[in-house]
Structures are given as structure tokens and as C-alpha cells.
Length: 196
Image 1: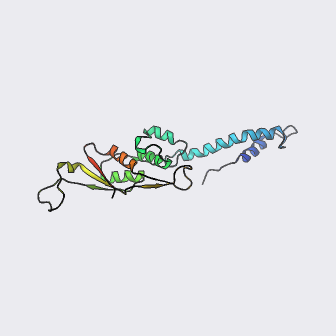
Image 2: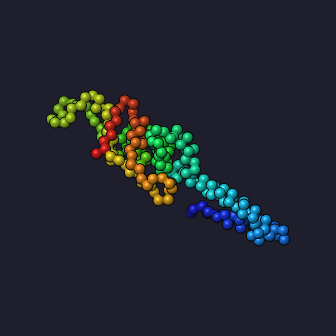
Image 3: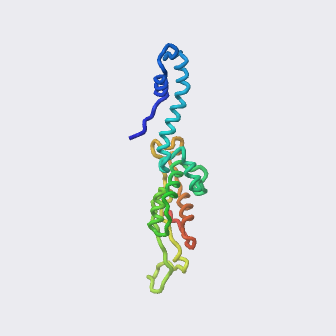
């Protein structure tokens, strides 16, 4: 059930109904009580709207007004998001950081990328060993610490209807994915991104 939304006229009527009855408390549009109610009603309407929005702002996946507070708590925005990230991308980073419980497994990195809005697969490599099939690529010991992120060349993040008025309809980028995974990869490993 959605929170009720009241108009300025609703608040004006409510304020006038709270006044006592009598000749000096006229409800006439030219009277002083009616005009004062018209001055106060927008303030009450904005306060009620903000209180209703607080329910949405309490959750990072739907926040608008408190997004800077969520970001400041998590050390965002960071260079990963670029110059002017969309609200959806900023929300996704907040949710990903809040739900991130750490890990170094393939399922962990796939799930973390999914939280950011990217569908990836991961390829692991191994150094060459004796009796490997002829024609396979030769790799030294460093390949034991190398893994590859396979994702589309450009991930398209589309704007959802009714969200973030004023933002572009879509953005094409994998910069956030690269930056966030490089920040979380084990320090001794080498990360390769495959966009084929």
C-alpha cells in the first residue's frame, strides 16, 4: 500500500477546519484566515511529501534524497563511477558495497558483478604442465594467478520508467565493473577483461 499523498488544497481545507467557528473566522476566500491557510498549506504539503519520501530513502535501492548520505557512509562516490554517474549506477554501487561480505571465489565475484548490474563469467588459467595437449598456449607460472572476466563489450544500463527524471536514457560502460573488481581482487592475482 502506497503512502497517501495530499495536495496543497487538502492542507488548506484541513487548516480551515481546525479553526474555531465565528464571524471573525471567515472561510471566505478574501478573508484573512483563508489567505493564511493558503500561505501555510504549501509548507505542510512539502513536509508531508518529505516524510513520505523518507520511507523510500530508508532503503538504498530506492533512495533519492538520502543518496549522498548513503554514499558518504560507504566512501562513495569514487573514481570508479566517472565524472557524472546516473542515479541508478550510484544506487547500484551503494547496494553492492552494503551487501558485499567479501570473498575470493568465482561465485562471489559473479554475484558481486550481478549486484552492480553486470552479467559476467570468469575463466581461470593454469601454467603449462608436462603432458598437456599439443597446440595449447604455453604459459609460465604467472598464469596460476591470472583470471579473466568475460563480459559484453559495453554493458548498456537503461533508465527505468519513473525513476531519476533528468538522467540519460541509457549509459554504455564497463568502467565501474573494472574498477570495483580490481579493488576487490586478491593482491597477488592478475585480472584480464575479455570483451568479446
